[in-house]
Length: 275
Image 1 (cartoon, rainbow, N blue to C red):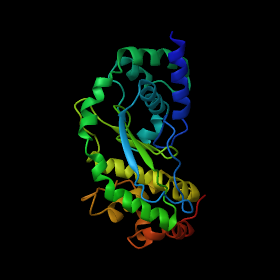
Image 2: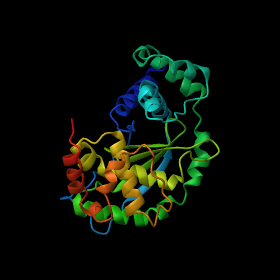
Image 3: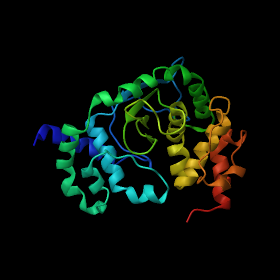
Image 4: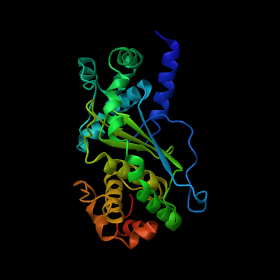
């Protein structure tokens, strides 16, 4: 066994389990600039930027392991999970999560040596070549929401392509979006641009809205969908809201109330208190 490789794997796995997706989330990251809150504004003249890369083998395996260990949640909420197309992983998906850990290191070695291939991400990377230009107007609106109520904005975002899991997920701590692609460069959910913006909105509201007001999974998804479909209606045309989202939020969130979203959510949880 390659102990140097195993140490890297262990570090990535530990980081991965700290993330939200579900949420959706997982993973490792470089040290990017800190996000700016309501009272800590952007450097004048600096527009947020984005970089795109393929997931490293340790990251990919951490994603896979996260989904395997949380399969009941994803099944319950109607998510379709992509795992490596190999009988080893098909068998693991049937094992109770508590019994998996003894197989982790040997499974990682197998994945690294026999499944992971960086060439598999080439077409997906090419398909996102123009994404920076498309995000300019999105970032302008992010900054407006930041000034209004503290929507979290990073000076730099990173999009990491993965072949596994759900269509998209995020790391709110480090400004990362994880986007599922295929070997032929296709994306499983909508236009990939829509998914990237959706996940960036998740990042923006995770602390100041979701955690602060203890929103559940489908409340959180509905807030993100409403922001995307209202605030970015001219950019994300024909944006589709997820059917399971909490529709009671619709009467509280509109074009005006998004300008003071914390107040709108306070009104919502006053009517629908947390347990």
